[in-house]
Amino acid sequence: MRIREIRATQPPTPGSPPDWRTQLGQIVVEIETDDGLVGIGVGGGGAAGIHVVQTVLRDLLLGRDATDVEQLHAEICHHTSFYGRKGLVVMAISGVDLALWDLRGKTANLPVARLLNPNVDLQRELPTYSTVFDDTDAETAFKSGHQAIKLHVERFGNRPDPAVIADLVQRTRDRLGPDASVMIDAFARWDIDTSLRIADAIAPHDVAWLEEPIQPDDLDGYAVLAEKSPVPIAGGEHEYLADGFKTLIDRRLHAVLQPDISWCGGLTTLIDIYKMAQAANIRVVPHRGCEPYGLAAIAALDRNPLAESGRKWFNCLGGFPAICDGRISLSNEPGFGVARGDR
Image (cartoon, rainbow, N blue to C red):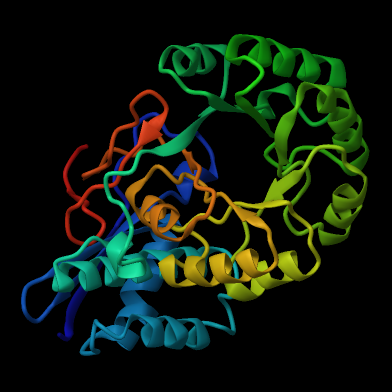
């Protein structure tokens, strides 16, 4: 099964954040084989990512055996290593890798989750959590039956009053009850001192984790937080490839790792992350895990599964499973079960 063509596009995403997440937004990668199968993956990098896919990656992959996914991933990463060990190039690689895995599943007429774990229960309902950006989002999540909510607090600025964040957490805890999970996402807006003061303020409210409080490359800063924060630290959404995560794991900088399968290097990389993290007894909770790509890995590989709500504004693909009463189940369609066209 040889690769005949590779295409990449950036679909319109009305309602997406008016920043780099749209300007350098998600791309859809399609890989067509000589027997007519088409694999669909989602990567990142916008127009720059499309250029990488349709030039250096396309030249490397045309005519190659599409079933040799791991070898192709290794060659792609090696081929782009002078300029692409992190960031946009890896985001583009992610889309290609996921398209290849989609092809692998379609060729075997099996869901990708079953390729990863033949014993996976495709009917199992997996727990989810809802990421909310404001009070309106939160109210929707409460009414939808979610028992785990992550409060995205970027809107409070770079040095918010710890009492304000603690009050928000307390109000959320009061609505959800004592057995639910509450998390905080600071979107890398804070410094170390602010992070520790807020961690101290919210710790009495049983917060499951504090996510990306400082910039992702401040590894020494994360070492301080890992040692001193009374709230577990989460991160890795903006880390890339197995080597990047190996550093986080070896230094034990995060209690919870959050790779994004569409950015970190694809499923091939995510499998490596799970192996390393589980050996080190570190939890993995993939970013946007309710979307079909990450959901397959969570269902097949995770000992303590938890899937994050997807993006409301990413509607260019069909086949996304729906969350019902805070839980979600896999599709049993071959590959990742996605198709072009609205959900």
